[in-house]
Image 1 (cartoon, rainbow, N blue to C red):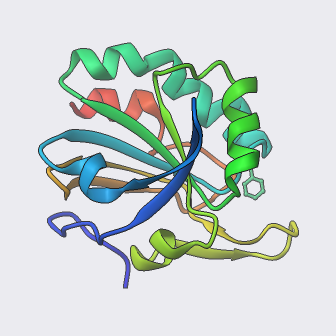
Image 2 (cartoon, rainbow, N blue to C red; image 1 turned 45 degrees about the horizontal axis):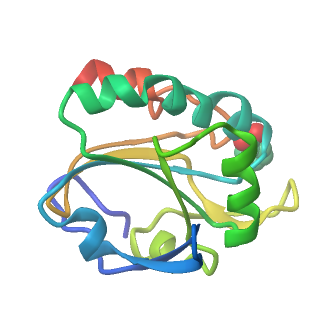
Amino acid sequence: MAIAIGDKLPAATFKKFGADGMVDIGSDDLFTGKKVVLFAVPGAFTPTCHEQHLPGFVRHAADLKAKGVDEIVCVAVNDPFVLKAWEEQSGVGDAIKLLSDGNADFTRAVGMDVALTGPFLGTRSKRYAMLVEDGVVKDLMVEDNPGAVSVSGAEELLAKL
Ligand code: BEZ
C-alpha cells in the first residue's frame, strides 16, 4: 500500500557519492528533527526529470530553504554512479542531495514502485514529492503520469509552504 499523509517513513538506507567516495545515508540522519522536501523521479537523465523536475528544484532550492526547509533530497531508482554523473551535469552543488535507491527498497516500502517496462526502464519510482517533518509525511503529491510534472514540482511545493 502506498504511503499516505500522516504516516511515518520506513527506515531506509540510500547511497551517495561524497568527497571520500560512496557512503550510506540512513533515514534517521536524513529526517530526524528536520523539515525535508523529498522528491522522487523515474530516472536520472530521462527528459522530464532532466529538463523540468530537477532543474525546478535547483532554481527554487534557496526559496524552499527560506521557507524553513532544512534539506531537499531527490530519490531515484538508479545506481550511485549514474546519480553522481547526473549531479555533476545538472549543477546541483550542495543545494540538493541526490540519493540512490538502486535496489528500489525504499521505493517499494513506500508503495511508489512502478513497472516502466514500455520505455525499457524496468522497475522505477513514480514521480512524486513529499514534505516530511521529523520523519512523518505532512504533504504528498503523486503524478498520475510519470512523464509529466504537474503537482510534484518545486513551484507547486513552494506555493503550499
Ligand atoms: C521522463 O521523461 O522523465 C520519463 C520518460 C519515460 C518514462 C518515465 C519518465
